[in-house]
Image (tube, rainbow, N blue to C red):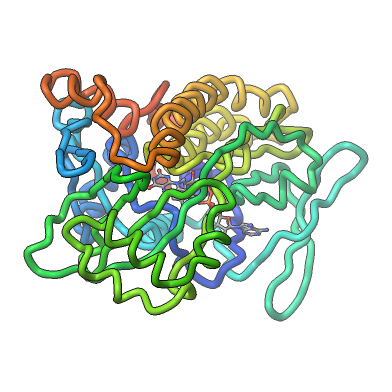
Length: 391
Ligand SMILES: Cc1cc2nc3c(=O)[nH]c(=O)nc-3n(C[C@H](O)[C@H](O)[C@H](O)COP(=O)(O)OP(=O)(O)OC[C@H]3O[C@@H](n4cnc5c(N)ncnc54)[C@H](O)[C@@H]3O)c2cc1C
């Protein structure tokens, strides 16, 4: 959506195809990072964006057993907004779609699923699209696969995927929000469980991190065992475990970390999770996807306004974004192997690692985890000469 908006704003004719009829899909993260807010400011959209209902998070903490450790501090970041915004992702997407639809060069088709690529020899020339009423072809100078970690585009393009692997899955569930609850997000390690709670105002969106494939064992154990586990890890919300009536209210999300060897071929480019599926660790995948979108538009908009992009020009996007991707995935693998895996193996609450105690003690150091999550590696900026508003 961001890539489509930026290209359209630069004067390139764009069609965005989304297979669902709305953006109401749970749950891919509610985080709008300080770097994205910086882009909003560069595009002149920040004030309007901040008018939408949202929560600001300035500090991130982790709980180990009963002890609380401050681990990240956004107030020290060199960005205009010294906070992370939490907002349901569909509202963010609706906002960008609304801005994009003010441009005559932007076209959004909902319930339009890409099922095939069109090709002339080795050159991709467009896509086949299925809608509820029909099927048809759209030809294009460039197809950008931004269709997520189960990307149809990358599969149909035959691009080789390097699977990095993740030893855990995530169970999503909701617990009721009660007045007097804290409002900040909570990450908690207790007795072999890792549990995250995100405030959605009327309920808590909760993530239980489990060993890969462990959901089948939990189901075999039954709801009694599952609720007992919930009571251990839900902290102040432990008495709400009974609100989960059955496993139908618990959804499994298989976590993947992978990346493409080559992000492009003639007439086609993959970005975001389609090029590099990110795990939820650190809540950085949205940031990376948006940064890819900006880099793509910065590199390709001046070309696409004149002519189709060459294979070499498409490869420039990967050259620009591969290092941030590798560095971030390396960080996610370290966290999953050094923190998550031992926590899930342990039967007792772990003692807080030294790094956590040091971060909690020195505020200045807490800017570094915040930078990794809030800004990331090699932040992108909108090139003003390309993105003069064209209405
Ligand atoms: C459980 C979980 C929690 C996460 N939490 C966070 C978090 O808190 N913060 C964070 O930064 N990241 C988080 N991530 C990672 C983040 O969700 C992704 O990295 C990010 O959404 C990638 O954005 P994207 O635009 O590349 O893909 P997506 O957000 O997956 O968007 C792809 C879009 O393409 C559409 N689509 C798919 N196939 C087709 C098709 N054939 N035709 C047309 N449309 C199609 C989909 O409907 C979807 O709208 C989480 C990931 C998981 C799995």
